[in-house]
Length: 461
Ligand code: NDP
Picture (cartoon, rainbow, N blue to C red):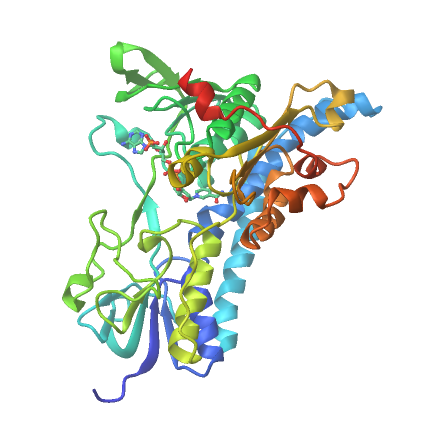
């Protein structure tokens, strides 16, 4: 084909798109990126970063309360929602600017426009009403909240997009769903003083996580006053004079000032022209890719949440980097999606890596379980009824640690290094021979001596 305008055109300046375009430009490729909203994507604009800032805000409630046991007198603290939101917005604007500069400084051209494919090499910049051509294209358009369309009154609910922009703190919050976003926002609103109810259609929160983690977080959130109602389907939402009323099955009603639907995310593929270019989707509507993130069209790639892999920022970053390596650095690179450590910033938070007990049994037939639940040293003085869970899932024959699951304030920080050990195929004996760091919560991970009854066995009793 004739010379194209660009070697790589990236649609979407979120985590995956920015990483790919920066690296590709640094490798010498002629790169352009189109972003219709704000550079940074979900993670920076309405995801990980603002969420964690809000989680920090919510933790101060405990800190003020706990301080008294350590001799501090704290006059009645007051919280200002508008101040938090304004400061958060300032930081997000700063980060978004950094993302734009990262690309431009690397030599990538940034178009602030929506981009759609006209054919497999032609991209229309709709805001500029012109087309450009590219030898390779990367679709990195991310995802958006999925809101069920079969609930009358769903328009009264907000998603995780709008929840970051609320002008006022809601007094009564109902959250529908019990995945990552639901439990994280439950912790945030609860810490900031709102009444929080989780309505979940299943039997236990956080499907897919280890059973002990699910039960522990449920118990700890309930102890903090969050009402968790499992087996609850929302039939309708109505606005009344006293607020929003959710009607559940069996005609029960729950009142709220804010209804947050945290019911999963959908890939952003609509109107992108993917079909015109010949890019195939899978049965869930996500772009179908191979392990190199190549779509059904060999020179079109897709990374991040628009594909159906792990919806996590560091994964999108890896996938974006791998595309740049493959195309422009002579190093075809596939991303390994096994043993990815992850954290849920609930309160208390979760850190998890590797196989859950259930998955390990399904894969290996049997497992040895080592676990402990204890009150952290800090709370021996405060009396706070908070417990830490640490659990190792171990192969009974090879002694290899297959999974590490933790609930507790330091879990997200700890799981990063537990992830290294698990990737290095550490055995339980390796954990045991590592000297403890004292006094920490982490030391429990290397001092777990007694086998415990598997949670799956207990659940089956
Ligand atoms: P999740 O997939 O984690 O959870 C979705 C929840 O909504 C589940 O409890 C699910 O129930 C429920 N649900 C789905 N559809 C419906 C429906 N129609 N009616 C009622 N309930 C429904 O999605 P989230 O929205 O919480 O988060 C999206 C993704 O973003 C996560 O999977 C994660 O990968 C990523 N993320 C990561 C974070 C982190 O790394 N800390 C933070 C936030 C998000 P069921 O279990 O029955 O399917």
